[in-house]
Image (cartoon, rainbow, N blue to C red; front, side, top):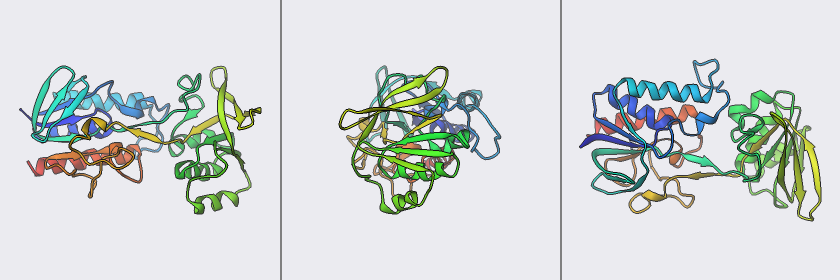
Length: 295
């Protein structure tokens, strides 16, 4: 019997573990893959308060080591199901706890084209606010048609010398207020009815090939490509008992509690407006302290 089981070893899950361990609770962290979540792939983090610059790998490793130094128990097992009685079933074992925190995060939806993974951190980014400053006075492109893509493009127009906004349809699905802002920018170019089909470069991204709906190809020289085609939460294994929205994110009225007593949520797994490292660790701290108070 554990005091707290945390599903997910990203920043929110590890922060929750850190707070619970410092409160002398018996904690188990379960992670399907590797610690760190999405942040481990970040080339550099330069927008985290109090840290001038750090790689995503180093940040995640530091947080992981903090948990291990407090004798935190981290097991790399895949959670298959959780039950209302706070039983967690993995591919290898069955565990029980007084409380559970779901910190499974979300993954960026990819374009699924050749060399995409290779260029992550070398021209490919899924977070304009995280990485945009690396492209000051350079030419970049954003791909996507929703609010995130439009907001990313707005943000980047104040940094990059030119921004291409590429969308596969003939109109954007994002809010008109964002589109109006973009239309007033003099360094934005819209490319509609088109898809990015190829990434070019040696060590870093140098250009992209775009194909329109008529099959015509053209190459655009860019230093960065910001992919904003949505995220995919990792919550379907909880759908038997936890309320999810239509996109699969965990619903929480206050950002901590789920619909099941003593099962909490933290980080990108939940419905929220801002998915950043700072909000992830904040969620983890709040979820852990709430769980401890309500044990």
